[in-house]
Image (cartoon, rainbow over all chains, first blue to last red; front, side, top):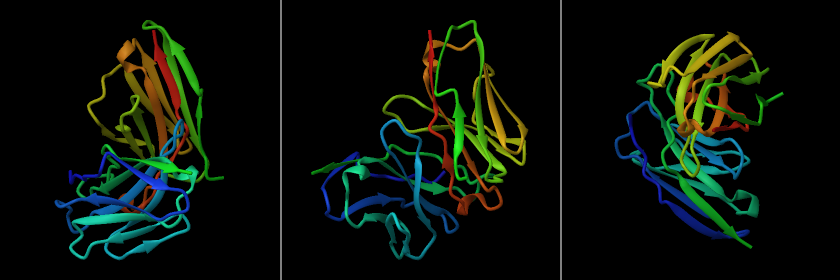
Length: 112
Length: 115
C-alpha cells in the first residue's frame, strides 16, 4: 500500500489560514488522495478528496502537486472547531475495496 | 438521512461474556466497514462488507465475528474478548460502486471496555 507522511502536530491561530502538508512519494497513477479529520470523542469525518486537479468544497481546498508526490489541505480561516487530527490517506486502487487505511495524522491545535 | 448509527455507545463486558455491536445506515450504501481505534492511535481497518458479502478480513481474531444481515445493518459479535480488545469500535459506510472515489460516512463509535 502507498504510504503518506504528515507532521505529527501543527498550531494555528484562529481566523488564519492553515496549510496541512502530506507527502506520498510512492503514489500510483490511479490512487485518490483523501483527507479525513477526527474531532475529540467523534468518529472520523470526510473533508475532501481528489485525483490530479485541485479541489474545493465548503470545508477546505486540496492542492495537489503536479507530480502528485505531495498535497496540501488548506483551511481558509481556522476556527476553534477545526481543532482535530487530520488524516491524509491514499485509497489503494489495487485493493478490491480501495481500503481506507489511516496513517498517524497531524494533530491541529487552534489558538484563540 | 446521512447518519451512521451505532449502538450501544458504551459497553462493559467480562471476558466470558457474549455481546454484539450494531451499526445501521439508511443511505442505500452497499459497502460497510468495521474499524478498531485504541486511545491516541489512528483507526485500524478490521472488516469490509460489499453487497452484504465479506470482502476483507484484516487478519482479525475469530473472537470478533462480523455479520451483515441486510444492506442497512452491520453487526459485530464479540465472544471471549481480552482486556487488550478494549477500544473504540467504529462503523462506516460508503456507496460501494467506486470505492477509491467515494467518501466514507462514520458513526460515533462504541466505546468497549473488557474487564
